[in-house]
Length: 173
Image 1: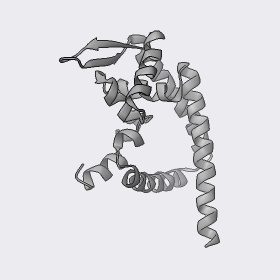
Image 2: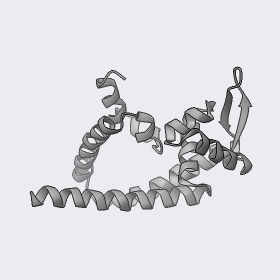
Image 3: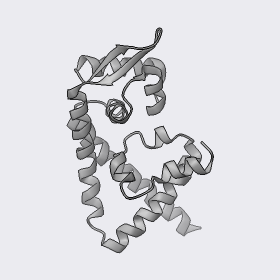
Image 4: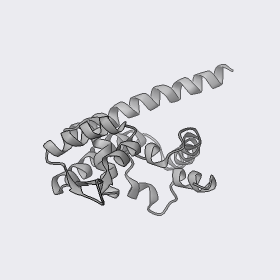
């Protein structure tokens, strides 16, 4: 049992440390909050979402999402455009799109540095283990949008299958 407890503890410490590194780089690069960074990444691949849908995808209530969009809009990173009926679409500005690219690069830099300590075989093994853990995480969370809200989707799906999307397809979602 100690081995399971130790492994879980090591995973927790690693997850927290990696999160701190990745979020610090991302938020500093874009000059926004963690939720603002996630919103810019999401809007980079799905422009034109409503405030409510954007909030759902990044784990915010409608009112919190509206405040976050207000902040991003005042920083010139997003703009609201009329949609159908009363619906308002949120789009990244050119500056917002550049900020999303910069924050993904800044998020990736410390992660690349960490995995550089591993040899090729260890990196492949880690990728397989992480894919398995992400599939289980999807089972618990139930939302590809939430699990992948800060993903650099092109790096995950180029010449590979996204493990979170694969888990969702297996569950018929």
